[in-house]
Image (tube, rainbow, N blue to C red):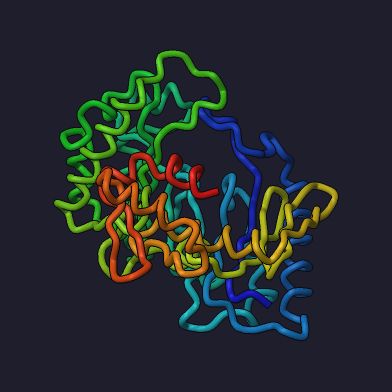
Length: 340
């Protein structure tokens, strides 16, 4: 069994204006209870497999996992956890309460990722998030009173968000939040929002945010992710470094050996890739991280990689490892497309 497990909870209060991900809005309490029961059964079956082992990482994502009562999962999870397991849960600021945080602690959670998205109140209203920046600040302070290992997500590039053009100044309040981790994503405008800034403006905003986060001690370790040393998200690093992971729940993806799975309402859709495609996928993912990629298995990539070095997008380390430069992080997708 893979040492990494991802569980997806698709429930949301409402659909945010920018989001095109799979979700179930307005599900009844009974639906959520039934879903948790199915997840508990799936986890139990996983723990009973012949190759079962203690998990290195466990990640509850969504959606909003905390819209569910997660305590029924405690018994199923217990055999898979130890004091070294990184157990992350994503939280919406409106989910944060002392009772919910105590509940999460009781099932073994030790890391929180809270989706703040913006500190601009007008942008939060346009997104449909349902809280203000002050609400988010108070929620995160409560999170920190229960979990030291806690961080947030931000999105740049939303229509009208002043943060995109003035990130260092508008993110300044975060200096006092005690962040261990921060993810900064650019808006993926799959819903056709009007008034989205151009790519160069968004890239400038991300560079500004990166400078600010570095000034408060968060180092960039992946294109969109920053952490204080020792607080990188181990689950996501495992995925980017090519490790296997099980995916449970609707909308969850999994990777074990050459097999891939996608969770649906009716079960799991399996697929399989060739050994060559599997190795290529696992190798390319690493380019997103500060580790870079080892090109040894793919010498045919070297001319392309060396060209990107000459263009200042990559730096070569030793005989075969290539890492992104700061400029390279802005065009990583283009680099990957050429290698694929």
